[in-house]
Image (tube, rainbow, N blue to C red; front, side, top):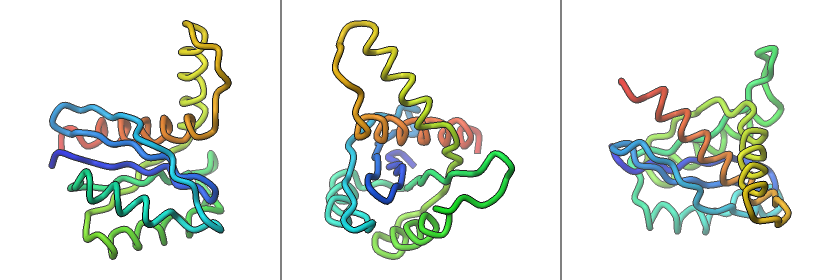
Length: 142
């Protein structure tokens, strides 16, 4: 395994990160806009074609009390659709707090120079890279 794509799925936007398991890196790639709460399949197809991943990782929000998040069924469906359309292995990774961590990372970057407003697109793609980093750490020894 080498190339992995991670998705931070959302009804409005889906953050995307690309990683390499050999060197253990994850890089924010882009944020895809959903159309009527449907994933941007054209954008996803282009990413799959460009990167040829051997694994897909999708963030799954888990509530603090362990209960099912309202998006769980939509994310499960998204995972099944990806697996069916592209014949690529799909795994899920807990994404709890990744958007908060992404926003904190961006604020730290802003404090060190740039003063631009933090956009939701930036938060989403950085959250995807955090999801991928967490997944790679969890799977490093397997």
